[in-house]
Image: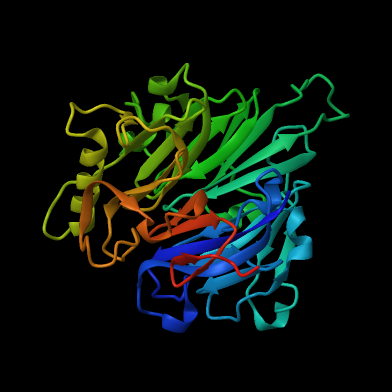
Length: 405
């Protein structure tokens, strides 16, 4: 049964990606930014109140439409009638904003933010399969863009009637890697092709690598050999790093969700355990961001001997319901309804106001002002945090009040 929900947000607002009226002032404590009238966790397309949270822009499912907040290449923000939203499986983008979406029926669309296309900002893109092995009938399921510009696309490939010797498993998916997004749109320069016979549940990207959650709930990685910690393994050479390989530390642990920021990856198991890994660059006065990241990963690791993947203990072993990762912060929703944060609060992304000005070096309880509400989902942009909250009341200025009968 559909219910109403509200979205609370805090953090970086220089582009108006949280509240255009107050940009460039950052949002220091959680404020309501939208209401979702038909939030239903049992229906996939309605349950994501924040379809995308990027560095300079945010997409909100707000009152039966999709709202674009923040930078859109200097062009007007696009209004999208939520009637078409059920056909949208996922949006994708990079530091400059939204780049397109994948439809539920496997079609790929690019976003063209130009005044001449204000009423129709999306263009259907056909993946050119001339450089790809058969079969040629592809159904796009995921698109991920890494910080270095490389792009990976997961596709479900149907049988090729002209080449029956190329038998396909029913759940078999391919992942194509391109050096940049334009190469995907023109269908050229495929760098690498991986075949996942068990299928692909999700595909996410860090600054230099890709993480695949396979159909049998395993985690595999591939990417730049210079940052092996993002691969959660030690590759033998460049070829080994750029080839898919299972994260052995998670082998045998069924994983249900993976999320990634620039330098941090988190995996959530079916048993509600949280695993985190990432790359901390050398600390120096000129690299304060990297110093904060090192503190974050040390806090996750609780100063134990270094491992590739860390099992995270929150509140004495609380089960984790949801997790979100930014560039330098992690937000966790536990099954008891509490929300915890760790990492940088430089842009007020933890919603702690002035309580923590730099980095929260240990897990801190968030959302103290809305304890009566039920948080059901967490989402993070690089320096923003979003909480999806449900209850029978309304939230004004971050506080819960009972709804009038």
